[in-house]
Image 1 (cartoon, helix red, strand yellow):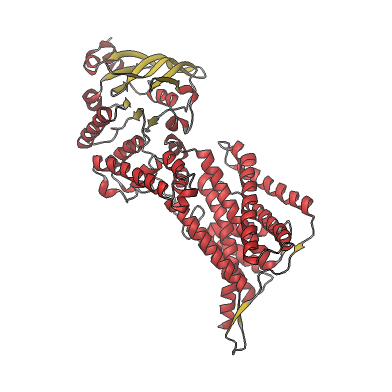
Image 2: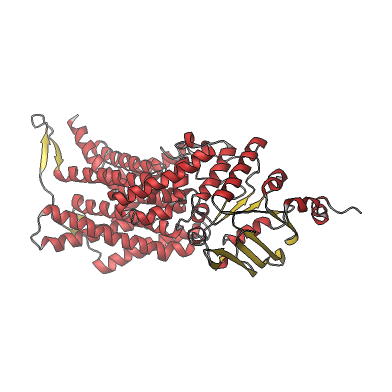
Length: 303
Length: 264
């Protein structure tokens, strides 16, 4: 029981990271109908910017909460610029082209970003000392002590706050309305005076900044990053988005959580070597039994 | 004669060798309903597509006169058609945002005003008073149109759940929420029952008299065309074959020939 609780806590924490990245996939798919395979690498860029700014702020004597806030804002800002630029350079010129064109462009962009970071930052892994330390211990009398670290609480709370804010943005604000309108009918939206190009850019900016938060959490949680982390994390977040129903925002959050839990539970109870196999088997099973995902809407074609 | 709103001059649209619109000139006025009729394939929808920036005309000009200013519609594409040129349109098929609520559909049409007021959503997130006031205004305006069309009770339902006739009405009032000078309606009465189409007539008459909006109407339903048009333009094979009042159109030999064919 205690062991299970521990895995549950770890799973939810990992799920937050996947959920935040998955939102970027699902939003971009919703609005322009393409899988942005460079999104995982945007997450990786976010992690790198976070680690660089942690190191810079580490030299100063600013209090820890402020450092966290500054790093968060800086990595969101820079990563959003990357996301925006990628969209302008690689996807916008291909809008209106055949469906596979932006997909191939995205794969290319992913390789470009990976190699850019490899050249600019070196191929060796970068490590950082734990920044948020401290933990709560539960069930001290039993033989298995459940540990909930302050970091895990910070990550989960930050994710919940971001997702709440984000849901508000999409459902209640004018920008969100415009975004949903573009998702359904871009021609009509532009005839009603909505600047569709700008709305798409904003989508990429929001998706990228959420991914950068995930990147910063990854740095804090694992402490070790390299230029290749975006690939695996990206594919898993993509799995999460598909599992939840691609195009559905609550689905992406739910999917992230489920993938995080499956991965952790599998490593905890069966074998940590095969955790990736478990996560991707979920993708296959989902596609066979729920082609539209858990919360995705089936497309009904009128005859 | 009221003020001239739109003048189309020598408009020609060629697709390769096919001439869809051939040297067409007509004008439409403020507070008037100008109907464009003609057999299928006469080029009516192509005229709309030129006006709203979907096609670039091969030749000719389309001038919109508003506020003592004349602008060429050729220069406007995309969202600027609605935002800057103040031209709104609907399509032959219904294109509502079907999984958004009726109210949201009307608010989307007021996107630009809200966007500026909300400082591109940044202030909107902070819930500043200025934005709240503007949003209340937008909801009021939506409510005004909903009351007028009797859709108020359905405001929170998904637009896709409305009946066909109500969806048609919603499309028109959504277009009106963009404050257009010129409203282009492509077969708004298609598929409506007689009661719905008489309601539509009433709505269009209200729009032209109360809102001083010029309406361009493509329609096959002659009861609508003859009932409300101030001015009728008849096209056949991309050419204008007749222009005049509804009554004159009904008696015109050319029009009857175009629709029914010539007796051998």
